[in-house]
Image 1: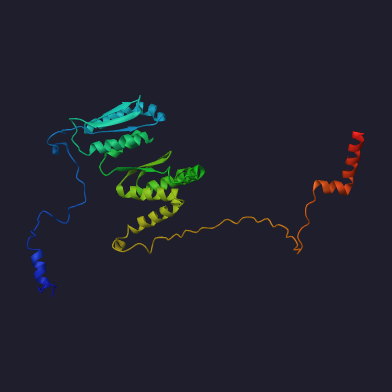
Image 2: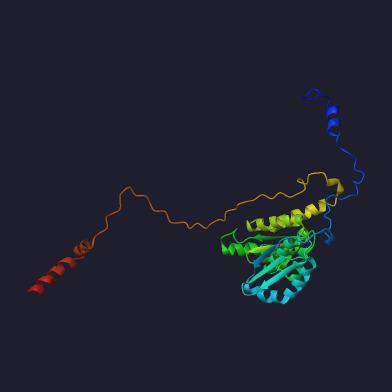
Length: 290
């Protein structure tokens, strides 16, 4: 019996009385699939213009000037206009009357951000595809020490770029380390893992720990029996150990203990009296006067 006094069976019937059969909703339908947005879905053009702009460093000017015709041609597919201003050092993208995808302007904004962060155009243009997102991770303000920052940033690359390649393969993301930022492109799940690896590396946790964890997860995902189980027992647990470096202690010779206080330091006059120099000086002064 429930709290209201009615049987539980009666309550379940009341909850389902407004539910109707859905013959079109079968098990073979993927509810998480993102359908492609087509131009015919847009009945009327945009009533207002949307635009985004970003600055780029001086060393990117020559490359952007060279590849800008390709950028303009690529964005024409979505009806997006773009402007390269070499005087102000900025890139601008904006919608036009021909724009048909509402989300394309945000993708174009990410495109110019990636181009400003030294990502080559053939790779950066992939951001316009569905299912590809980007993340620009700021790492410059995590560590104050410049030498420590450079050392930890180098860990993300590894010897001959091996660590960088391993992270890209496991997360299925493209990664570009430039200055104080890390630019990443790929699926949302991979970007989440990549951000965690980068931020933990700058906080002195080596990327190899996360790489081992991702490799184990990838192998466990192949087994359908473990799909509904927790994987905590398979994942390695790393404990942080603070090992203090041993400092060389220079042993000083111990002084012998004496109960008597040290003798007072003799003044200059006392030393002259002991040596007789004090009286010699007096005789010289008398001879000089006479």
